[in-house]
Image 1: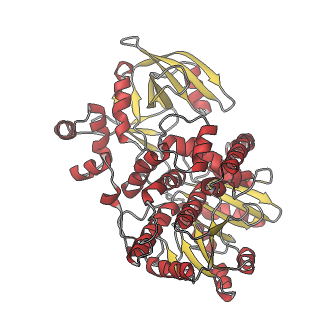
Image 2 (image 1 turned 90 degrees about the vertical axis):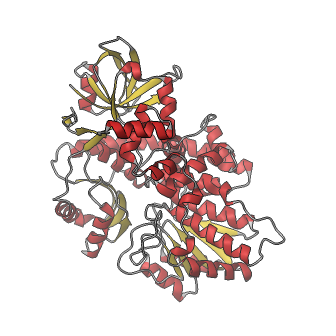
Image 3 (image 1 turned 180 degrees about the vertical axis):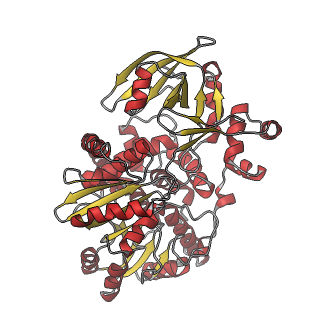
Length: 577
């Protein structure tokens, strides 16, 4: 077994060990290549788990929807609203999880003949989650049932206010709750404090919880004879939206989430959703899509409206049946995403300037110059760069809005709830790896001290587990094809990482405005070459590549994404001497 190695960026590389007998067993039983078997041994436990991992099926992982608290009560209230032809509104969040959850419910209700509407609050003027003004207006417009998706678990006062005006609320959420459950008609959330453990639900995105709601509702409607004289919806057709929301909310792609995404990608390739189909065409995505395309290409475009323009654009795109409207929204989102990139790039550089002047265990940066819509992306970039819990605040007068991203051992969602209970923040919530909150600007120094104290004992040393060591001549098109069986990748199932040994940098150059480095690497033994690229390379890695100072690289393997050919290339993330 090899000893850990320290990289030039300060991370520790640990090589995953695979006993030779186990490796041989996996290769023979599942017909795997040596490299794939090595990866699987350290990712998946028992043989049965490996079989499910390689071929995830909903029937093997889908929980009973009625095992979730609030499901029975929520469905009963929806049935009454359908029976009495009440006006129903879906109140969603403005991110991709909220947009897909909202569109999912609207599309299903439309298919069964029930018209519902969607309300997405404005990020800037209303902020995250339910608010009393919106609830009051919705009641005036005649709505009697409101289903909140991807929000609501912390909206105690707002839901109490809704109760007083006769607007019933069903909360469909996945964020961590406090010790008190809001007084809604029903609260469906696998992460509510009193929910007994239900396997395969803890890491669901809101769109996954919404899908379980539809499964339960569909079962009850079928039992009541609702579909005796009309066509029953095929819920599989909605997995495109479930996959999109699941990937973009960066939840663990294990268990049911892996099945959602694997099966959902097949539905996406059938282009059943009008808006999604038109957007992929606008983005020139004509080949078979992968989770990467959902998270890094499609998702940011759907998010662009909620970040810097109209919050409802994403849900409208995914729920419209009007081709002209879909075309117009898709074009608008592409323009907005370009603008978002420009705003993000400027803010990111300002944050880096602030961060370089500090030496804390928690990064907290604040400015009145940063648009609220992009601070989440910036927080994610900074967290990845420094491997520290990161909080980015956008100041607007006396109030600041924050987005936070965190590392494995630092539960930022619980920290935000603790800060709220301490009276430091106005509103806030989230989950282990991401959170958001609002606060008074004058309290920012105290908030900085609070989080620094809260995470003082957290181990912030980045440890990277290496799946295998490779030489350039072993990276072939066949290997690329073999690795595809491990997809979809995301949290809980990251792309395999390899150490590329004994190489020299032959050529290198900076490309693009974000500081990407393109290079050619040569094996010192065989003189075989391969193209490499380091996206958004930090100064340490950039200098090492440009000056040819390193001989071992931490890489992921992909088909060439630079347009030269379909040959394999490596994505460089780190290096060592």
